[in-house]
Length: 264
Image (cartoon, rainbow, N blue to C red):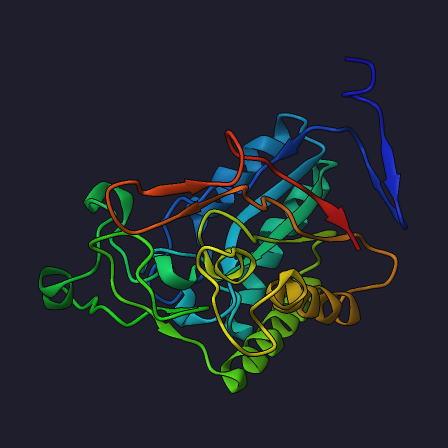
């Protein structure tokens, strides 16, 4: 307990204690992806309660990578100001403001959880939320019933890296202290890391080095576009299980699921 409430310094940033509020997807944004008063009150209460670090839910770097139409975004400059309001309040309470960058990849184009979390369809299109085709490492369906993704081209991969870099710059402009990326749970970056889902025959597939290449290039892009003295993490929430289509649903390389965090 003494360690839990003791400070911790990494690079030029001192964490006031070891209590970190992890990202929680709440699906309360409008389709424009802008943070609103709901997000402000949701995160503010944790800082008021004394958490040393409060992290946003995942911020989507490209609209095609949204889980749902309710996801928060970081794909445009319009997202900076409402996020800056949140970051500023967290810091006023003595907490560090942290942000997570994300792309849902093959798990994109879905309903909000309370609507079923299934694939968007005609009913949602009639309400102004039409489905779109997700992207992934391969054109293979992750879970039976979800939309069939298409494989990303090399040019799209390079643009994705640029999108992560731009997201990092926007998060920095919004005043955040800590940066994180999501590379687990069957989302886009995990789809490249996993030997189950990634069977590409180019430089972004094949052996472990090829499968890791995208995540490492994104990490390099974040480091180049993030203040040198501030911590950025990559490799957070890397899963040891991979979702699959069919009756088994899960192919496991080990029992349970593991999490790894590497600071860069």
